[in-house]
Length: 409
Image (cartoon, rainbow, N blue to C red; front, side, top):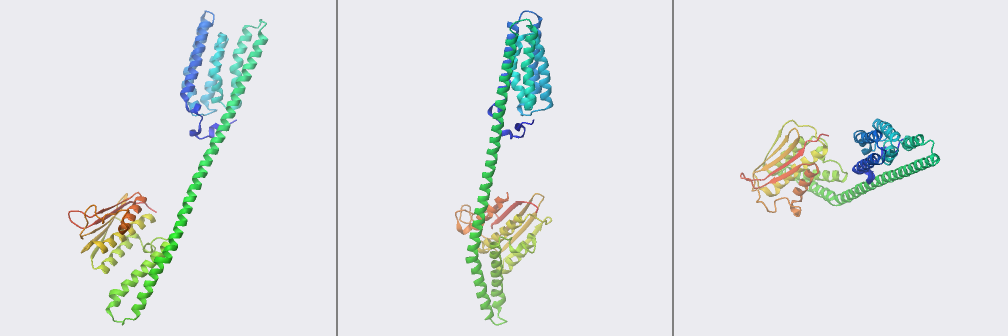
């Protein structure tokens, strides 16, 4: 029979099972007390010393062989059977030499239940109780008290088995309760996870509806107005190419981005090209629209990264170039994407005015104007990366650096 204790989680053990030192101390005290009783109370002669020596030999046997399977609650192991067999041999011989040796059974009976499956433990417990009884009967076979001794032996054996079964049943029920508690805790964690996921989904749906009703509709209205105004211009009017066509393109791109957010898709720019090419196109478009000298460089060999990494890199480039457009008053900007073994690094540096430490230009969660930089820090942190903004360097200008683990898809 296999006990449920073998399949129970280690951290659900009873307090008495966790405190192995208690079992060690109990076994040592019981055997030591029995040895003292044998030496003091037994008749003088070599038998008492032999009995004491046999009992004493069980102590190192316990610590070397039985302690580990008892500590790990491993029933039915080879070490357990070896210990029980040798213990019975030593204990039985000592009991035939000196009757008082049977007091050591108070230590050996628990060992049987700890080391053996239940049915075999019962056999071992019966042997532990009957061996000294048999020794007493053989020693006093002519005594009229033999019947009383047999009754006493039967009573002690029954009591030991009853206590053993009772404790075993308590342990089984405790294991079942521990397993039930573990399942309930797992279910509670799963409910919390599903509730969180449902909350995230509900919030995403709410934001998608808000984006659809505000930004997407607004971009669509702007696009329609620009297209209507463009149609009123003469075919050769320079405003077409200089103003209206770039404006219409930007409006279309932002409308597509808004619709992608509504559908929870990756950025539109990443749908048809890798992130290195998307940032290249973004930089080229930025330079054409602003007149700022914009350069782009790729270091290392571009490779396919996880979609989340691509999104953060593209958003970082967009945010950094937007800030250059709005705040830097720069004459040039350089964008560098570096692929290294463990990380990928995006650097956007301009030669504008920069900013002093502690000013509003630094990313601040309480500053709505620079929410984009705050969001950039949070995006990088979610991927175990970093985002830094340096606007007080000796060479002037502002440098935005985003470094992310080079996670592959």
